[in-house]
Image 1 (cartoon, rainbow, N blue to C red):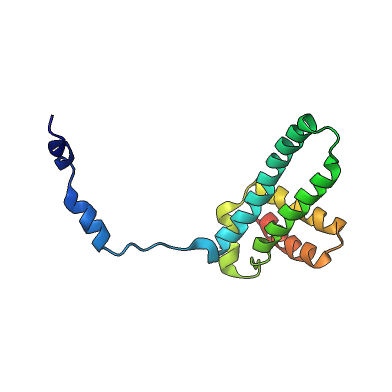
Image 2 (cartoon, rainbow, N blue to C red; image 1 turned 180 degrees about the vertical axis):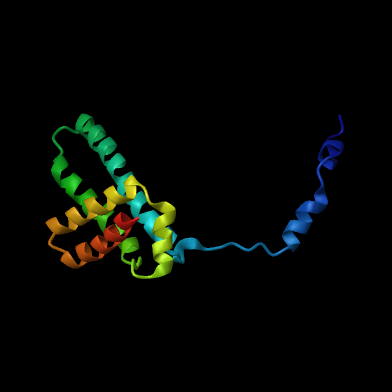
Length: 140
């Protein structure tokens, strides 16, 4: 068996052609669909991860204070999610169109949970912004 014959079956010119062409990559990290999607994803994934980690740690180290761990995890997740939500402006038409694309019950639930979290911390400016987004979502 001649290995060169096997590799010659593949078009080597296409690789060179791809390398010569300029490949354009679109960075969506500066787009409202990314911001709102990341917000939702962070809140939802946090809930799942928190259940698993608390269950694991209860079995592994029963003497560990899970309430402190739970609180720290919540703060970290909601603050990071806020980073993305704060960039979203529900007054802009382009941003309203994004809501139409990704609206679902998870988005509504994530917004409600975030508002509740920040109410508990008395960060009412964040609550007001999240409430504006929630109001736009509920209009649809």
